[in-house]
Structure formats: structure tokens, C-alpha cells
View 1 (cartoon, one colour):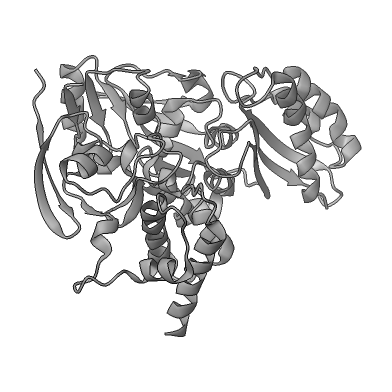
View 2 (cartoon, helix red, strand yellow; view 1 turned 90 degrees about the vertical axis):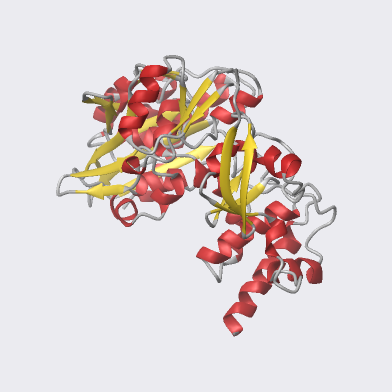
Length: 280
Length: 160
């Protein structure tokens, strides 16, 4: 590697990216430096984004919450706006990596790394997160599910960076549930994860639900059919049993070092039963 | 051609100006170029916490940072915790008093993490301490003693 840049202003960044078409961009470095060490990547030029203060912090207006892509996981956990409205994200962040990793890693980095096991991703999918992608002359928006294309693959051209994540404040959900099944509690890559937003009516019927699973496909998976099917169903073992079968049919897990596909399929469905604790 | 970068930062209260290659990691700069062997490299991939240092007061992993990222920052390693008369930091004192270590390899990283914890939460519960040190692995298994030590510190703080 012959060059490392740390731009502090967007204009400086665009110039560096123009002049170095092979440059690899990183934020917290918690994934990239591991890959450098194991020699999976050997970039000649790195651009570290950590000094771009414009892309840090959380803001809100009447309708939306805006999270700068370079906001660290710890900053999000301590942020009053996120603590108030985005419990689903705080539940996931508490299980991401370890405290030092959360001091370094950023929301934008977790998205662009695009691991199917990325802890913030399933919550962002069910929050219908929109991503703002900046380049020298323009800004575009994309829903997260069309931005992430596969493991480690995102719709980001050279000269573009993920700058902000935008989440609508409505509709409100009473239940924010995130569960991660891993080999241990800290520093574990998930074997299966499930994020849920849900409202339950006073007669224990599911009135509104969004569900997404991590680590059981090439990207986070969300199934509109299952969400639709569950609306109006009682929040009981019987009420959920058919959906569990549907989930086990639809997920596309693989065997790897952490678990077998068969185990992941079984658990992905059965995680739905955890929602029973919210029954009324 | 690869040219060195000039890096300037504060290390344990002293101004440092040093040249480093672009791919030099912080752990290598500290241990090999600056002779501070408190931060240890065990896994080199962010799993173990033995290379933990404080960067602007927050604990970070020096194996996952490039040296150039130190520019303009305030760094504290275990070597920077001594008081003016060479006294140990209260956290170090309690580790000694309660025997919160066996081999000591994880201790410098563990202590930096605990200092970050106590700065943001001076009276952590046992569960909060467990959570805070969850990224610092002790292969001797001294965890219970470490929890005892941190609990004792927070009790003493609250008695003051």
C-alpha cells in the first residue's frame, strides 16, 4: 500500500477519489483491517472517512430521522432520538461486536460491508430505511433492499459514498424485537437473527407486523407474503404455526463454519415463537 | 514509490512527531517504533481486546487502526496511567490488591476498557461490567476477580 488519505471535507474527498480510481474507502476499519491482515484485499490506496464530520450525528424533523453514515454504533446507542424512536436499532446495536468495536464501527460501514449477518441490517430493512448516496455533483436515494445486492456487494459506484440513512417516524410500532442466535453473546457473528416490528390489538390479534431475517440468505430477507398472512392472526402458538412452516420454506440458508443450513432453517422459523411474550 | 507520512499526536501526555509507512498499524507503531509494549497483539483482528488503548478518551483496538488515524488525537496506553510520583492508577491498585489477573497478558487492554467504562459510568452494576469487558478476552479465566475489582472501585467511589 502506498497511500492513505483522511479527507476532512467532502470536496477534498471527491478530488482524492477522482485522482485515485483504485482507491478503497473505509470508515471504522473493523472489517477492512481484518481483510488487509489476512491479505484478502491488497489495495494500493486507502481513503479513511473518519474525519468527515458532516457525515456524523443523528437529527430529526417532524417526519424523518437522519443518521449520518459515519455515526459510530456507540454514538447511536447514546443518542436520545434513537433511544426514543428506534428501539429496534438499539436492541441490535447492543449485540453488535463488543464495546471497542462499537466505538470504531459505523452505521454506514455496517451497511456497505453488506454481510448477511450485519446486525443493523435486519432492523433497517423493516424500518424501510432509505439511503442517501452522495457524489461530487449529486445525491441519490435508494431503499436499503435495492442498495444491498449480495454478500459484500452494494450498488455503489467509484466516486460515490453512502452519506446518510433516513428512517420515517411513522407508523409507530409498540413491539420492537431483535434476537440474534450466535455461538456466544459477545463478538459473535449471528447464526440466525430476526428483527420484528409489531402491533398487537387488545384481543391479542396481530394488527401490523414487519419481519426480517439475517444470516439465512445472501442478503437480509423480508417476506411480504408472510407479513400479510400474519395480520389478523392470534398471537398464539396455533396462530403462528403455519407462518413458521412458510418461513422455513422461504429462507435460503447455507452450511458454513457456524451452523448447518438445516439448523438455520429450523431456527429461523421458530424464532417467531419468541413473539409470544408480547401477547396480551 | 512509497513515501512515509508524518504523524503528530499526543501520547501519554507527550507530543509525538513520527514518520510511518502508510500501512503501519497503530499497534506496530506503539510497540516497535515507540517501545510501548503494554498494548499486546494477540488475535490481530479485533476479537480479543488485548491491544486496547484510549483514543480521545474512548477505548479502541490498536490492531484495527492505521497509524495515520492517530493524527491530532490524544492517546493513552497503560504506560500513561502512572501518577506524577509513579503511583499506580486506582484501577491498577485494585487489580494488584485483589489479584485480578494470572498471566497478565490481557490486563493492559482490560484496564483501558475499564477506565473508559468508569469515565462514562462511575458506578456500574456487575452486569454492566460484564457487558463492558465482553470484548476483552482473559484466557486464564480471571473474570470473577476482575468483576470483583471493578465492583470494589465503584463502591469506593460511591463512599467518597
